[in-house]
Image (cartoon, rainbow, N blue to C red):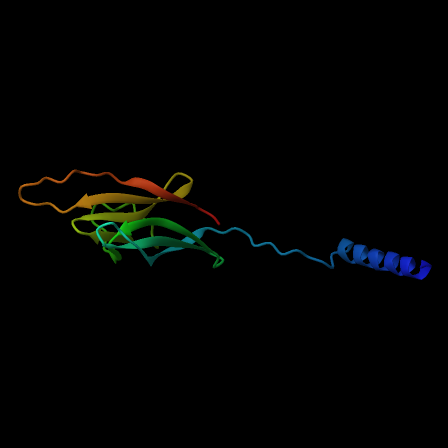
Length: 149
């Protein structure tokens, strides 16, 4: 019994010495600025009218290659990248604008730089008809990403 106790004490002292002199090093991944954004789409549920939906995700990659992914929204219809309009001077470099659309109603999504974060903005639009003036919608913030991750 004494021999087991002595062996245990020697093992504990060896481990403590190894850790104490730097033999064991923990690795930490340092945060880095976000450098690119990628939209991703996944099939969503059917709405009550039978129109298929789309789940929208945004992947933000930092300078070390680490990716932060968030689900942004689920919308009716399908989505695709589009060219920014003249009013989109605030879109972050390394990102794009997307449009989602179904049955006369759609949404635009874009990424802008906030004061201390990146903001994902959404704006609704409607199809206009000669006898109908569609409402004017404003961009609203729907998600936020840190500037470093």
